[in-house]
Length: 66
Figure 1 (cartoon, rainbow, N blue to C red):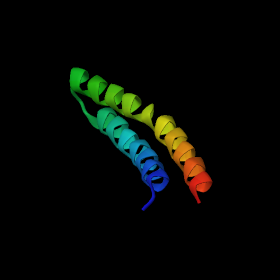
Figure 2 (cartoon, rainbow, N blue to C red):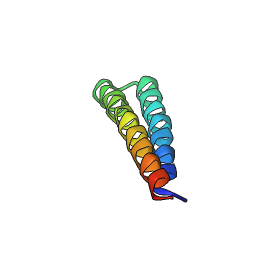
Figure 3 (tube, rainbow, N blue to C red):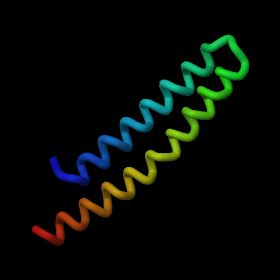
């Protein structure tokens, strides 16, 4: 698998993992742990654009190399 494909997969995985953490935080009944899980979900969700941008950069670089 090309590096661009890996970056795209990691971007999609970060979105799914972010949603999972956020939903887990919503379902928790304890206040502090609930808030922490939701914040973790938001933080991980900010990784996705970086992975997608890196994927596009690597994809463009792979096209030039071909």
